[in-house]
Length: 88
Image (cartoon, rainbow, N blue to C red; front, side):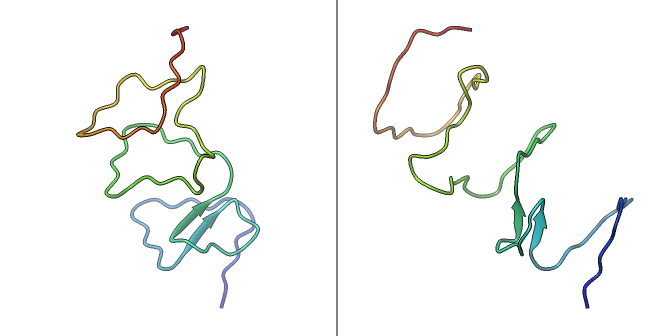
């Protein structure tokens, strides 16, 4: 059966969730972890896998005001480059 909590849920210690988890969703999560809305991660993150956008030619990495400082990688594959003067 389902468990529903109306109010705050505070978990101290280790938690194990089996199945899909949805955060801020009105429908069932179809992925292991699905988050609707903005997500903020404070601190360092380590990813063991690929970071892939949901759709091609749709999403950006950074903004005009929030740019990445350095990008380290083994190789780079870019289809086009639009160079503009830096304005920090």
